Length: 246
Image (cartoon, rainbow, N blue to C red):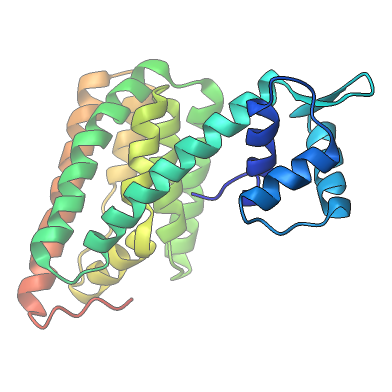
């Protein structure tokens, strides 16, 4: 997950936050040097102006800058992203392997998360997101007719449901698990190799969510993940050399 601010910008915010009083450009430059970050005073000044224009910092009289609530929140978000990225790397190690058990673990984790996001989406989804899901499905069907990849639409469909669930933690967990190593592209490739027909799973899930049928939405998502597991097993049995290249 990409940081909104770069490393030096985040470090400057931390320096200002840790200061017990307004802090000036030279003092910030010295603090950066203490952290072994070699940045010119001119560059520090430009970064401070940028952070101030973004409402992360503000000037206090002529004494220097102080951090704003938005700046404090930006630091917290950056720290959270660092934690997520650490865990992403660990999960990436699993997904990047060509071991069947590990590949199936990813689907199992997705099933647990997406059953709940789908159920919550049926309860919480806005009309705008219902329209968005339909637009994704329409675009997916159009690409299928033209023989184009629908991997991006697959990701977007599931990501929209996760977002519509209203649970930010579940949404983050889905994004961590589902987006590595072009996972949707891999699944699409495997289905094409075993000639697994495209199902109407997304349309069925969409209808359940649109009808606010939480139990049916949850059931259909579980079925969707089970079918995906079956496709992976079929592929693996057919191509036992572990071929995994889209």
